[in-house]
Length: 304
Image (cartoon, rainbow, N blue to C red; front, side):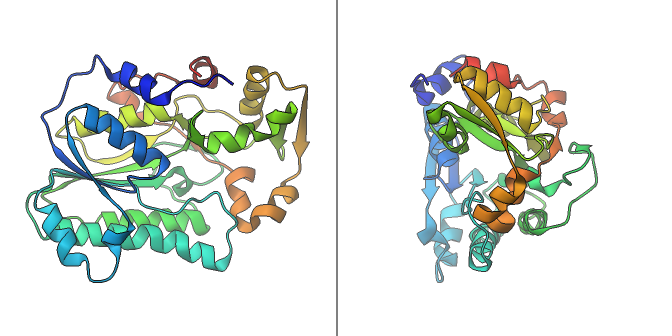
């Protein structure tokens, strides 16, 4: 695997974009994988970015958070514990609390000031059912823990005052050679082994990190936009097709299928992230003519 500097890629990618008016932007989850790169990009665009760590969301900090919001134009909410983990009862509670509590506190703080014009709150494509194919105009929702978590997360964000613009970004799996889920996906390839999960027919909705950062800047730059935006690649990719492309890129000698029970043993209920999936289309981004740099798996692998 070539060790490209994703930061240089992002800088090159956006070098020709028009600079926005300088804004003050607060980001919860700014030290996470996505938050770190988004902070770097927005700072390079000339914006003043303030990272909101966990200490901001402890008890007794509501007034401090509200005071901070008085100086912000945009708030981006990325807070949340990683979902790629074994879902014990305790960890499911952590997944819930790490999303709902910061979102609730941010909304309360924003509602106490007239300054913030835009609130962007993350969600996930796990909102949608695992059967069928959906976009932002599909008024359907799935059952199960992850879908319920997404609904609760979005409902908290929806309590923002009407004078502020609200954008919900439903993320697919974010891919970058620098970290995150991609490093887990290529780990078996250290032994030249590619693995198909279960039947391999389950959809795999993903987005390149560069496209996610670009899409985030894209929606920030449009003062009239609001509502839900799916952040996923335009190509609908089954797990087996993604694995095949991965195997070609890293010259796997063997591709094997692992039964779903294997993943349930390791991840428990959380195995649904791997053994099931959602077919999700980024219709609104395409309607707005956002240009994906990695619209297909093949394009993604050519860039790394």
